Length: 108
Image (cartoon, rainbow, N blue to C red; front, side, top):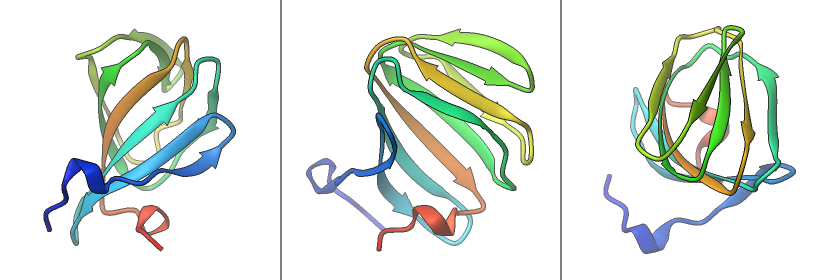
């Protein structure tokens, strides 16, 4: 699968958070998240390993109860079923890769 940057379309997930699913295969899915400053991804967990990279902005990502302030260029890996949340300090964009591919994030 190949996708041009101009083909990315966002869909809202929760208030202030949008997702553009970029590419996916059998085992992974990569998406770009846009988070409005002040938005919060509540504490949750899922059966997917999640690896992320902050493109722009600043966020606080809490992984298994530990807060990490992230800026552009910072990255993380969250194991399957590990509780995590995030809060956007300012408008931010992040790339996230999920394994296995999240069916709920596939384009409709």
